[in-house]
Amino acid sequence: MGLKLNIDIDTHRGPSTEPYMRIDQITVQREANRMIVSTALYACKEDVKLKQNVPGDAIFYTNRSESGDQVNIPLSYKFDLSERVNKVVPVYEKQLVIEKVPYVSFDPETGDEMTAYEEVKSEKMVKVSEKEEWVDVDNFAMIQKDIFSLAYNKIQEHLESLFPNNDIIVD
View (tube, rainbow, N blue to C red):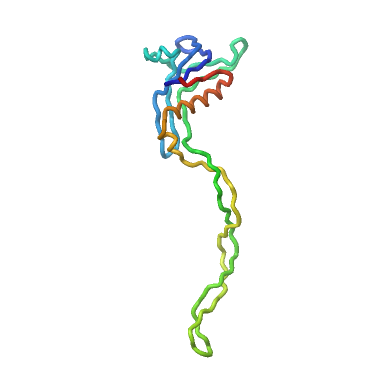
């Protein structure tokens, strides 16, 4: 499995019109909630069997006929393993609250025990409303299904943002 890049690049081994990228290593950092993917770039798919990867950076020129921008193809990627979720969060406000607190007293006429109430003023956090917020939630279930497909899809999204007019195919 790998990514076939339909772009024209220059490498240390010369030009290539169909470079091929494969995952070399995946590291999951649970505490940082991220995945680090190291890749290897080959001049073509046949070089994978020969283990002749392209050393160093590969350069893509946005427009060869003019002075096009130079884009280095990254070989290491960091991806968050969190998921954005819309969550309802309560909104609290500090307010002065008057509560009736029961206490035991005695009836002055009969001497019987009775429950009396005293008003006590105190400041408390009171829920005044609710609001919706987008929060990041850990989602390690996404890597438990198929970590390689997830990694290739994330790399493909990143490369498509770098090369919007070119095809990047999961092969």
